[in-house]
Image (tube, rainbow, N blue to C red; front, side, top):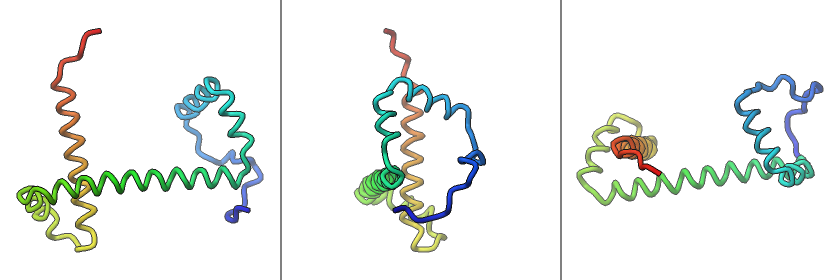
Amino acid sequence: MIKGKPQPENNGSDVRQNPEINAKIDAYIQANPKRWEYIQGLTPERMARTIVLQDIQKQERTERMRNSVLKKIEEDPEVKQAYQTLVKNLPEDQRQKVIATLALSAQRAQQRGQAQSQPAQQV
């Protein structure tokens, strides 16, 4: 059984609503009625565990990406020194995370720049 905060009596009407997200959800439900039926049949315990599993998988993906970026930085002493210079004033326990965050941001910016500089392909 799931333990935690008791559910409000108003069926969650105080939960913030986002019309764009609701429209996406409604479109998915209409496009996937069998999946929706399956989801509705899940117990609250199973739904909660599924959400936790998704959180775990997201965290593992983030960690794999971070480790991959840090490995690439470690392979290039010049790049490693540049990042260490950027984070030299941070507490030691925060440096690796910040280096990975900076490197991922730089990688995304570089990819966006490359995508924008390539002409659109004609179909």
